[in-house]
Image (cartoon, rainbow, N blue to C red; front, side, top):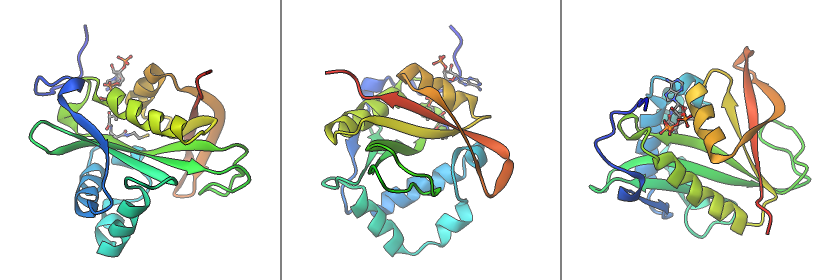
Length: 195
Ligand SMILES: CC(C)(COP(=O)(O)OP(=O)(O)OC[C@H]1O[C@@H](n2cnc3c(N)ncnc32)[C@H](O)[C@@H]1OP(=O)(O)O)[C@@H](O)C(=O)NCCC(=O)NCCS
């Protein structure tokens, strides 16, 4: 079997996946800054390392409260390696029907939006991303969203492969962002399971 990983022998069951606590803003900040230094950050994330590094502590404190345990508007999940290091994350935002999303497009149904998906390189390819999505999707369905969506760059084939395996499919919606209008971003969606 082809393997793209240099993971240190860990499997998904070796990690603890949990929602962040509202006071964990410093660790949230550090993981985000590390993600923004990843070689694929340009096609993976909106915003730059420099912009994030310049933000005051209050920004990260607000962010951790807004997406920490107890929030019903957003939830950030992290994966801890056995030594306690934070090695992966994703955040689910709840988008309400009748509002506009961050790009100004109308939101037609109550839905989850997965953002900030990141696994440290040495922990990729071992199923951890599946565990993070299990936690994020479980929370989204408990929030009674009708579907979950995410946006992925057309060239980010590794992320697309992971999302398809989880069950996401392209919706057909193609977006461009103002910082580079010649590059396409694709919307992938996953409907709420029946029952
Ligand atoms: C996106 C990310 C979280 C996925 O986690 P992962 O552990 O790498 O995912 P996996 O390796 O389990 O799955 C990736 C798929 O792409 C395949 N793949 C791996 N490396 C690849 C490469 N260089 N080119 C093409 N496909 C590749 C894998 O085989 C797998 O496909 P499969 O399910 O058919 O076997 C992780 O790669 C990451 O953090 N990337 C950087 C940040 C990023 O891109 N975030 C997403 C923003 S939308």
